[in-house]
Length: 226
Ligand code: SF4
Image (cartoon, rainbow, N blue to C red):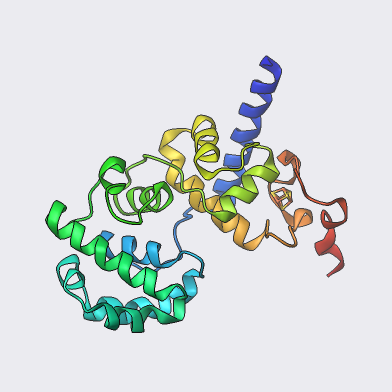
């Protein structure tokens, strides 16, 4: 057991060191210029790409630059703007409800704690952790998206499947000051190297510390032959 813990600590130190070198300034790929924009863009990014969200938000924030404006928006107008992102009715309803709550409860400002963020409709720990860490530098969680989930499982950093449990495992391993950056770094690594269908183990900086859990043997060096 002691050996296992020691191995985990050594591995996470090396993984962090290598990720730091590869993604020194890892952050979101969503465009934003204030916490309100980051919150809304993060909610809109569910089930779609950051690139698509970035195509839609200039129009959205051009017309509705803050929570006060968005809280009073006509739902049909928001729906037509966010339509290209899929789930547009649900997303439109959610972001208008968030804006209304921000106005009613937080004077139009995005709150700076996890407890308060979780009071916003449709906002879970993942969105809250992204906004708190990225916009305010407040480290209250590690955002576990589909990439973080997959990469941390393959690396052997967690054996859990539920995002909340994976987050707990990662928070226990990673120093708190690195939580926000670590989430972003694993997301980028999952998006561009440790991809769902073809993990590029042969060029991966984490290869020597990776347990490659669930990675089929014939995928491990696949990028060599592409
Ligand atoms: S070695 Fe392969 S499975 Fe492990 S993190 Fe890198 S790409 Fe993913």
